[in-house]
Length: 363
Image (cartoon, rainbow, N blue to C red; front, side, top):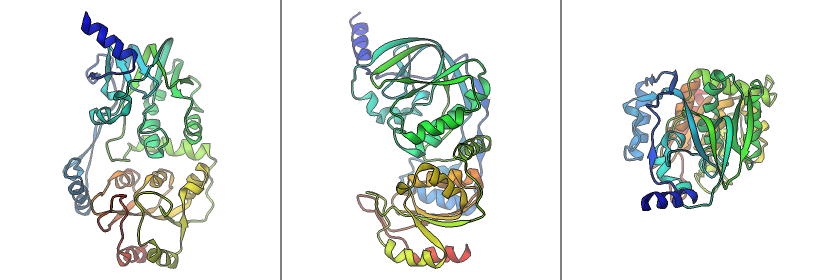
């Protein structure tokens, strides 16, 4: 009895330290099977280099499996407004927070916070994923929005999508683009300090893997066309060459960018700082790009909206990330990496300008 009272007090404070899984839930409906990706020799060498920089905690050089996609229909599920996690019988459903490692890292499960209970009748779902996607376009477009694909295909009955009122403008806007053709879906807003117990909840699986922008072709084409259409993207006949600068960023800056810029200009590249553009302008810009050079960073998320382009990405030698290599793999884009010097505490580093120019000559 004492343990039950203790758990009740902890749960009323929004603190859940146990988790459960719904992978074998009787209502689980597989929407698409798993998929293996195969890599060439140069691709495997890059993936091995990346794995070594992470002490092999993630090693896609040994093989990459796109997870199966599924929907699980839960009864009397609780959704936490401070994180988007789903709770059943006092335990966090690990598939609602991506995986165990993110569950362990999330401050939403380490910091008690009063969450006021609300009971809601009807059918609900959610793609909230906090704090990861609070204002991060990478996590929004790869961890969140793709989860709606199978929900909207499979569910014809009225369904409410639980989101937060403090969504950044581009997130609310692109969510509306996605839902425009699905009259059965309606967005409802949960407060940061609320938890909703809903009569029925459809839990959609995450489609993405860690450090990967790879999406199944049907999903990435659906997402691309929805965003293109929503923003009114039009072919201009003007193919552009773009360098995405992080000169104003606090981390992952190219320290010898001043040496690099004249070389890029010689090959027709214009310098762009994504933070200076509206999201519609970013999508239109990437749609028109035939070649993109950039240090690793969230700005490369917009590769998702390129019609077709060649990509050169910079990495510090001690932190080589595979997000956009795998995104390009899914889109069929030509991808090359340049690995620079070892990064400092802010992950700033230098790149070999001659190595960059060799790639530019080929382009």
